[in-house]
Image (cartoon, rainbow, N blue to C red):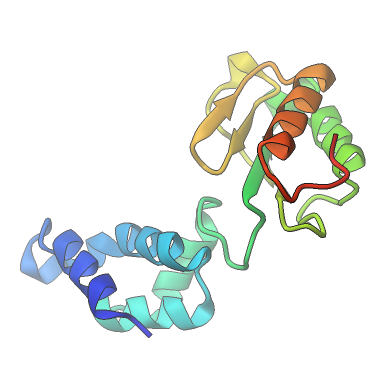
Length: 167
């Protein structure tokens, strides 16, 4: 399940902690798996657990607690829209519904071309900038009006040569 290069990357992460605390590297190891495979499968969770000397359920708890870990394949662009109360009060749900209509998918789904996956987030820690969203767990987008959402989606789709129907 784990290639030699993956195990070498794991070893570098584990080495950052005392010998009896290898499990402290669980988040880094899950991130490595996701970088290499695109998501963290149950089989990958078990492999990480075996490597770190943890129970599979302990690794699964980490995977399911943080929304940065994809438990299934996702689109090239994962869009996490904050729907926590402060964002809801500033149109976070409206932003989510606008994206559902624009992309033709429901929250939790991926477009048929595999380009966009739409998810909700509990909190992205930028309440003053609501509504906010996170693209691919890295790029924070603030004050997302319908016009800004359209511009973002159209720009991302235009950058993809095989994108259809999102403009």
